[in-house]
Amino acid sequence: MIKTTRILAAALLVLAGAAHAAGAPAPRMEPVNADPRDVASLQRGARTFVNYCLNCHAAKHMRYNRLADLGLTEQQIADNLVLTGRFETTDAGVQYVPTKTGETMQVAMRAADAKKWFGVSPPDLSVEARVRGEQWLYNYLLAFYRDDASSTGWNNLVFPNVGMPHALWTMQGAQKLVVTTFAKRSDADAAAIAAKGLALVEPAPGGTFVVKTLAEGTPGAMTPAEYRAAATDLVNFMAYVAEPSKLARTRLGLVVLMFLGVLFAFAYWLKREYWKDVH
Ligand code: HEC
Image 1 (spheres, rainbow, N blue to C red):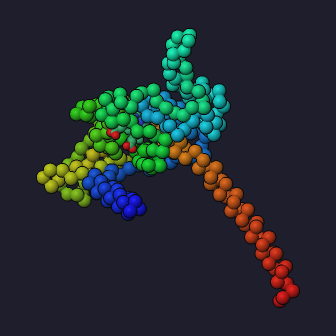
Image 2: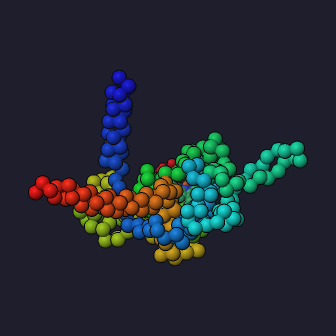
């Protein structure tokens, strides 16, 4: 019984996903080139993450001292990446206790407050890179634009009406939405391809189609190329957080295959030895 209910629930989820995918047109996205072996990129991504994302989002499955994987010492982690702490009442009065490197990446903000401020609580980002995929994440970070109609003042081409403000706007600047109307779907699709970047084709009233793209508005501290590099580093780091032992796992896989290869050579040699007298 329980099994049937589970299967039914799973089928419903799949259907709901398909309906969602069919309902919301997916944007054309830019490719991302994150290299999990690039330790410097992972370190830069970690810095951006703790400075710009951890104020709202936790990564509660990640311990700070695990970042030693990225070639950092415990001291470097404590000095540069642990930015949170809490107030505790002791006999000596109220004291500020910085987060220890053995703790997980929690946020200081309470979930209830977050819900009040943003309408939704910022989700935990521990496995976000696996839930959404690296390309989605990268494009999400590129896709914020100014929107006076939204409560945060921001909107996102990849995640329409998102409740998150653009956390990296000082780096990227504020982009503007550009909407072009076409009479025919094929013309709209062609324009989206020609845009050579993020572009969303949507049906519009009157049987027409609009292509939504983004243009530079107020510049940020970085050029578009620099911002793309920073977003790549951040996605790289988030993919690492989602699966910290991926590199070790693939490396171990190779060692196992090599071992099996050697074992095969010996087994074959033994077989020939045994059968030598028979033939
Ligand atoms: C000011 C608080 C705040 C900051 C800072 C912030 N976020 Fe968010 N984020 C949110 C909220 C709120 C949501 C939920 C939005 C929704 O569901 O509409 C969200 C949603 C997301 C999502 C989508 C989750 C999903 O799959 O539905 C991703 C990915 C994300 N944030 C990544 C980041 C990254 C990366 C950073 C750092 C660069 C960051 N956020 C910084 C508040 C924040």
